[in-house]
Length: 270
Image (cartoon, rainbow, N blue to C red; front, top):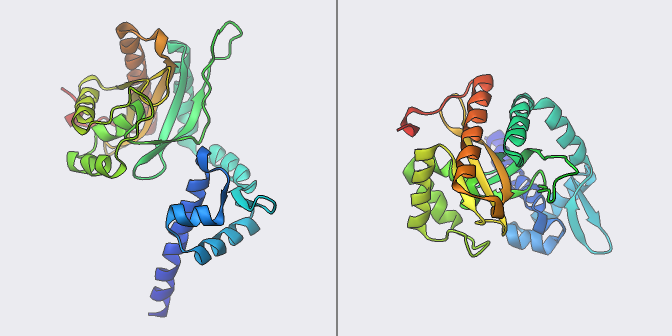
């Protein structure tokens, strides 16, 4: 009984710790005071302070005495470097990501879920040419809600409808640009198109001036566990280019699944 009580008391602390690290990893929250963290995450202030103090001791977070703000700590760089070395599936997928970049001449990315409703850049390939007038650069670790851009559509389109509806209603829509989809029914229609074509498209829905095309990567059970995408200038967009990028991404997805043992679910095919 004593052991069970201890486990029950430790689980909320572990969950709160994860929430704090995830919170500080978002660009807009990169520096926050104890009060801000406690309020935004609905964590008791004394508990939050205790967790932050422990994280600071182990250099998972850093504390600025002058500004009274917390930020991510230096030891996470070590962990991130080790993780990138140890996660074989990313190393196996990266050559195909590079192939997409070379074929489409666009910045290409891999994304993974970091929670039930957010995605994160985990790998990227960017064209490195002095002849490029504009180069699109992305930051690894950047988060996106599932209801924004082409990336999230790939996950939601292949979920059970009830589960997808629940997430959409919980996350809701944020109007990042004038072209962001904020209507529930219109967004659901866009998910149907993803399953029809096998890839998702967003046109300045998240970032002004940029478009995204994305394809799902399925695991051995037929669930989406990664997304591969390319990002380009909206001014370069036309139907032929969308179709070209979509087919290249689908091909890269198939190649990655062959290497990792994933399979496309039968219900996603027409």
